[in-house]
Length: 93
Image (cartoon, rainbow, N blue to C red; front, side, top):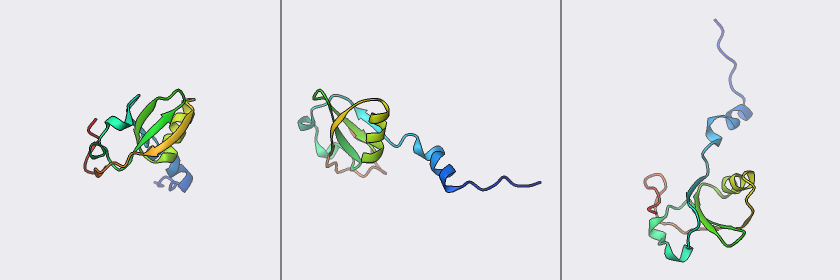
């Protein structure tokens, strides 16, 4: 019996790991009412056209890609300044 061919790097990138790199925590929030101690360090404030602000987790690139794929125009991606370790905690919102 022969073993299946090893995956190439491009196949590995397209695989399981790309899904779920952006998580929208909460939509339409007021950033001034949210405490930094309640957010993880990987949280961002996503400023959308129309003045709405969302909170999302992930890297800025993956967040932008997710919103772009959904056809939503962004005006700014701002770091939230959260204090919690994302490996040990989740945002408390």
